Length: 349
Image 1 (cartoon, one colour):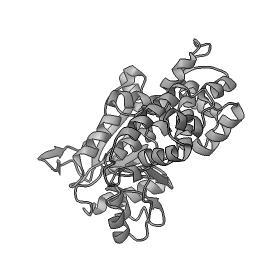
Image 2 (cartoon, one colour; image 1 turned 120 degrees about the horizontal axis):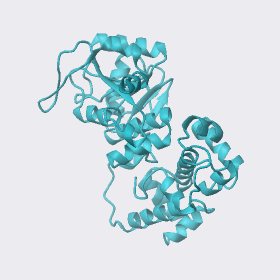
Image 3 (cartoon, rainbow, N blue to C red; image 1 turned 120 degrees about the vertical axis):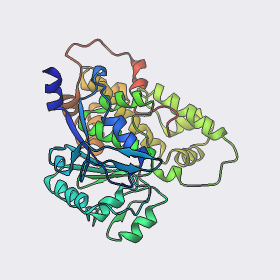
């Protein structure tokens, strides 16, 4: 009875399947939403493989996917996810395009991984909207769908409740972000730890576009050490000059190398880590807001509240109310644990 009740209250996710979808993306979607991690505190998910009919869907490499629901089930879904395509211009079946349009009209969240953006574009759902795909496919998306505003270097992007992601690993980033958005940072971190990946990566896909190989890895090693140092000292007032000195570089040279390696500025990366640390503290503890702000390195509750509003479109108190997993009067958290609450591994790029 308890299992049936959990299933009934589970977050419903539809994986849209048709010939030509990528097996890797199917695996990512299945790993994130199709694995039961409720014994580790993760939410309950109900993942369904949805297609025009329930005949096996062929994929590259001799693999097949067996749908367990037809497109009618999309009306029950909280989230619809479209895998990327092996052939980027594979036409989606007309029933799929029609069903996606109806789902968007209902207000259902829709996400596409990598070249799945082409499926959304074929359905007309990206007309006049911003979207992203793999950096090597952006020109192709522009050429075939000029009405789409193609963003060149994001890892993922949202416009009107429609999400698109860059290539391969960025699909993992988007899936974890969608978990984080619906269920909180701790739920995303639990799944990420199980997958042995970072809960989120900072930067853009500009860092992955083909460039000449650097002459040496010295700077990369130094920057990795700086990021690790920063994560261990988030509660301290860190500046770019402080980080540059730790890397034994000038501030200008440090900022240039940091941006080239991570795709984001040192200050933006540091802010991302502070927000992630604050999210974890809000979820795991009942510490007062000023103490959460101090341990995450914001200095004051006002500053933390401003950054939550601009980056997460919510307040720290509302975030705690929505995602706290800690009963009142929890044991205190040591300052040293703040580094563990940061959003990504010190060497994550």
